[in-house]
Length: 295
Ligand code: NAD
Image 1 (cartoon, rainbow, N blue to C red):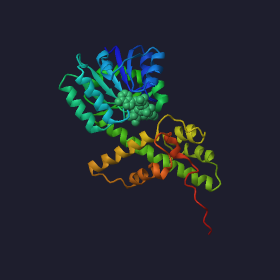
Image 2 (tube, rainbow, N blue to C red):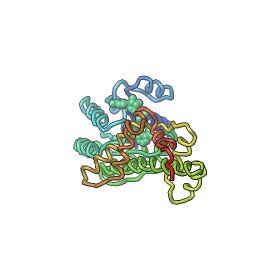
Image 3 (cartoon, rainbow, N blue to C red):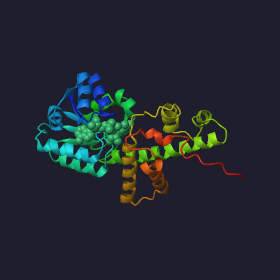
């Protein structure tokens, strides 16, 4: 049974997962590029290391929570180059990454006796901190079984979607829908307000009727209508997901005219929201309000 777990990437998601793992009784080793994130982790009893390879060497299972697929690949390659993969290990990559990269790493590590699961997550920083994420897994059954105790500590729901890369594909489909729902929900509420119905009243109805989604039930009440815009997910990372979903569509020859329009509305230029701002700003109900037409 896995006892020592590494976490590489201690941002909005990784920090919460590291703490959930610690609370579940695992001994947790961690690394982040940011000294400040490392110091905050150390305050809660997490053992920090100077390099990602040292975290891999010290752990049976390693959870990655990194911005991009290129970071995931570089981290695993650095671990291999440093000889950190001495015992059989399982990498659980919770980053929103790319199926092709996951398949490449799963094959490369399987040849050496190690496992790699694509394990993107949904549920935000709140889900990570409370061990209540939803995880969508791609990879072999034997490695899923091996990862189960770690997954139990970070997730309320685990769905084994299929072979390597399947979790990444499911996550990109999910997040493309989130991007669409964000704009259509804001537009619906804008129509309600422009026609004299307060957004809160329209929302009560939508959430009891068929127009609802996680965005209308959770995100808009908590982070848009409240005016807080602090969900803990950056617009830049969400734009990455939209871009990857459209790249996947292109590779698969799948037409997505609505998503293409949504992607263009999501751009920094068209939305006025910069990469480092919270993604919920894309849902501002007042944005895009036009002059009334006469007649
Ligand atoms: P974040 O920007 O808050 O944190 C990323 C962390 O990774 C930072 O602390 C950064 O210093 C660190 N980092 C960057 N490159 C690194 C490297 N090479 N080695 C070690 N550390 C490195 O991002 P986040 O919101 O925690 O997202 C992490 C991943 O989870 C992303 O792939 C994101 O798309 C995905 N995700 C985020 C959310 C969310 O709500 N925030 C939800 C689901 C999935």
